[in-house]
Image (tube, rainbow, N blue to C red; front, side, top):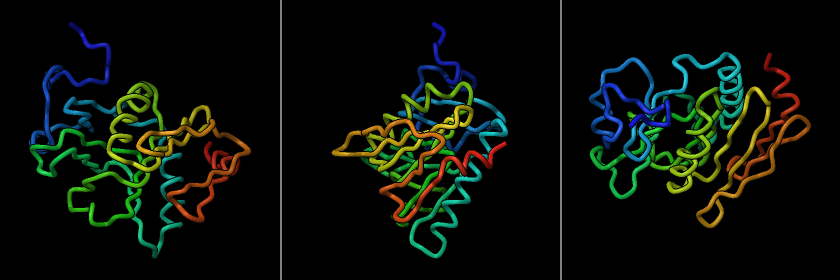
Length: 202
């Protein structure tokens, strides 16, 4: 039976297979893929749209400047984030994602391969075709893993929504857009003026 999700990788992986980070490390493929609860997903687009890249790059640079000389680190994709459930052994990790941006304040979670454990903040910039994955599959694993804030930016509509983890469950903000100034409980002192921010994106 054909999968309803076109992002699910069928070759050389099987639709019904379950894969670990140990498997992931053996694959020699040109495209970026992610594991979500053992299932393999390819990037929605081999090359992200220009506006996607501008939004991700500009926000990444703002966060880098904010944290310069301070404790937290900020990374932009490609960057492996492993989300273990019970064990940190490669064979026991079944979720490995490549967020557009992630911020890690517990530096013990960082190693040469990337991050093992939940970042404090994850930002996903939507691309055509990946909305289903970001809004459902990743939402679930980020919530379960304890990512404190999950931002979703829609570059075409120039909107942003923030999910904050409260008592183990995500609570959504209202939909932010032009005229709003964003603050974050994870980033003390940081402000993002969406009018100014999106105004820099052609």
